[in-house]
Length: 375
Image 1 (cartoon, one colour):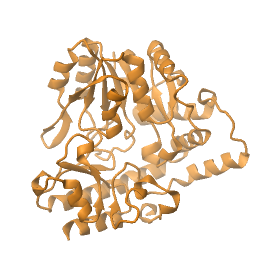
Image 2 (image 1 turned 120 degrees about the horizontal axis):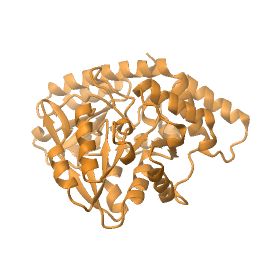
Image 3 (image 1 turned 60 degrees about the vertical axis):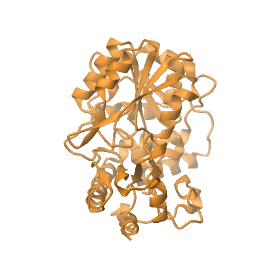
C-alpha cells in the first residue's frame, strides 16, 4: 500500500520531526500523518502554481471550492447547506478563538470538554474568559462527555459557550445522536452557543459509528458553529485552510465581525487543495480508512499485552489516548521518551497519567514503536 512508504520529512522542517531533532526518539505526537498527499491534490497544486499568479482571492468568490464543500457535506453526512453558510478560516484554532470573541464578553464562562488538545484548552484564557471543565467519563468501555455535569454547569447564566470536539480528541469517541441531542437540549434551554470542532469527522474507523454534524441537528441550527477542514484527513494542515458552517445569519455576522482585521483569508493553495480533496480523492480516502483501522487494531492489541497500559479503542481519528497510570511512573511522558518514543504529554490535555500516540504512520513505524516500548 502507498501508506507503507517511509518518507523522510526532515528536509521540510516538519514540526513533528523538529521536536526531537538530534535525539534518538521516534516522533508520534502532533496530529498530522506521515502519509503523502493523494496525487489529485498534488496535481491540482502543481496546476495552480503553474498558472503563475498568486494574488488576492476572496474565498467566498472561489465558486468551485465552495461547491466542493457543499457537495461533500451532502454526500458524506446528508447535510444540505447553502454556500452562504460557509466562513473560510485559516485553521479551526483561529476559528474557535473567533467564536469566543463573537459570543462572549470578558469575564464570561466557556465550557470546555476535557481532556482536549492544548489550543482548545487555552482558548478561554486567551480571550479573557473563564474556563469551566466538563469531564470525560468511561461508560461501557467507551469514553463520553459527562452530560450531567454539562447540564449542571450550563445552568450558570455566566456560561455563554460550549466548545466540544467531535470526534473527540484525544479519546477518539464519535458522539451518538442521543448524546448530541442531549447536548443540544442543554445548550438551547440555557442559551449556550455550541462550537463544535469536527476536524476529524472524515476519519471514522468504527464502521458502526456515524458522524452527525452539530449544525445538522434539528431545532439547533441557530446556536451551532460547526468547524471542519480537509486538513487532518488529507494531510494538508500546513496549507492553513478550514471552514465554519454557520446557518444563522446573525451569528455569522458576529463571527465575521470578531475576525475582521485579525484573521487573514485562507490561502489560494489551501482552497485548491480542499477542492481537490473533496472532489477527486474518494478512493484514496477509503484506502486511508482501511489502513488506519489496521493500525488502530494492531496498536490496541499490543497495548493490551503490556502491563501498566490501557487503551479504550478509539472509534475515530488516528490518535490513541493511552492510560499509563498502571506503570507506577510519576512522569509517563519521560517513561516513553526514555524508551525512544515521543508521544504527546497527557498533562497538556488535562491528565498527566496519559499519553497520546499518533498512529497515522506507516505500519513499520508503529511496529518499531511497539518494539521499543516492549524492550
